[in-house]
Length: 396
Image: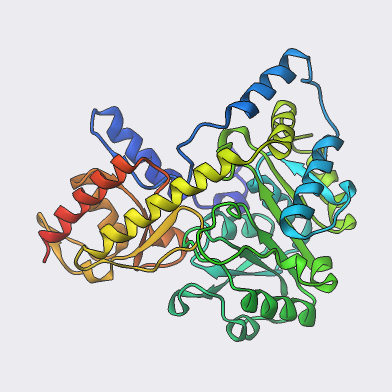
């Protein structure tokens, strides 16, 4: 047999999904696992969205659609971007895809040539570097761990060279929960214009905001808007993860290239999902805000509980539904005969001994941390953190 594609053999598996698989394997054995690893809202998709999907199925709206999406949905996305983000786009500036992840994948595929570099703030969502590599590009990481996870414009500029094609921003951020300030966004916008690089603005968590304000970098001025591809979706805001609904807004030449690419891959996003998304964008956001308030209450609970724990430190996330736990003080300590040398060892102890699943920071480019999601019930949060506390107290 001839060998497989070298490009794809070099792609690593998703570490978040790998942890989730281990947790599910233990569950299958009858172990009660508290899962703090999955970045998925634990709420149901609002009923009016589910009902709309059923109605459209019964009406027979199940055929192919234009590759970039149905016109009413693209118009609703434009209205949303104008209302929420102060961004004026036409339907011809929009591409609807099978999730924000698919939209990002498409962007990298049409932007990058072999050797092009993409600046990625670290810690980062685990798929960014792999997507860049799949498109033939080179990920270049911008460390933020010593700056409360905020980007430093001087550090960014020090990494820009003739090979730099783009920088990706994710605010509110996965995995840190940080929200980039207006000053930071203005500084990055100035750099992008000065050095003529693209900005990929991943705004999937924009509705899950607890402190500060969400600003779309493309809204700052026309010069940066022309260089920005704004990516969003309904997975986190409307608890529609499995529906796979994402979209992007960009200049028309980029949209045309992505539309052509998508026409040869997925053809179009799920027709039923597009009509469900149309209902979501035109509907009342009362349940969206209810979910946000629930996450905010869980965030307060998590932070208060962790502050009472020895050896673990954390910053306070301003958005999304994650908190990063600095577990470096546990390194070198022994628990039941095993020495924890790094965050991966700590995560393994928590999973095997406390039956609590978290993702090691190595998945996000930061070795001293674990990522915990509070997209789970208050009952599980209380029990899971109590289990962890017992392990840690045994190490003091």
